Amino acid sequence: MSSNYLTQEQDDRLRRWESWNKSYFIFAFFSLIVILVFSSQLGLSSGDSWGPLGVLIALLITPIIILQLRLECPACGQKIGWQAKLMAPNQCKACGTFLRSKDSSS
Image 1 (cartoon, helix red, strand yellow):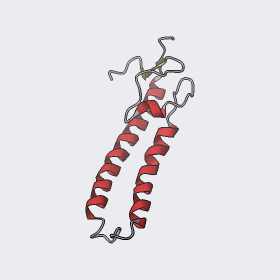
Image 2 (image 1 turned 120 degrees about the vertical axis):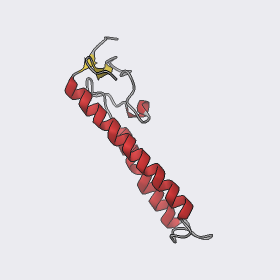
Image 3 (image 1 turned 135 degrees about the vertical axis):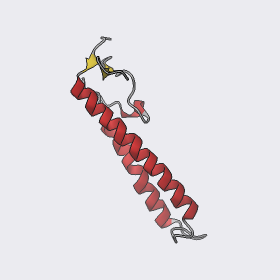
Image 4 (image 1 turned 90 degrees about the horizontal axis):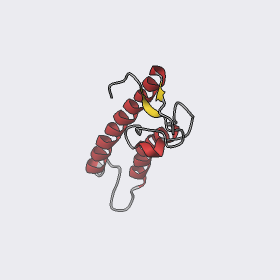
């Protein structure tokens, strides 16, 4: 394992992914709460049918999965999305690169 760091450009790209991921997660979380709480008043569900509600939930969750699948280590290209949760991991398990730039304070 080496002690490599990302370039500033690679770090900026990774922080942009984190920002998009976190922002969309917050949007989806609050949207799901509103949809689930008000689903019967909005006509999305009834005692017999939950079809439209299921479609909406799937449409809100799918981008989260896509964002996770798109994240890869800027240094080696290894997919690291499932290690990430909301923020990128500290280090790539494949190449050992620290996922921040040398001069970043985070």
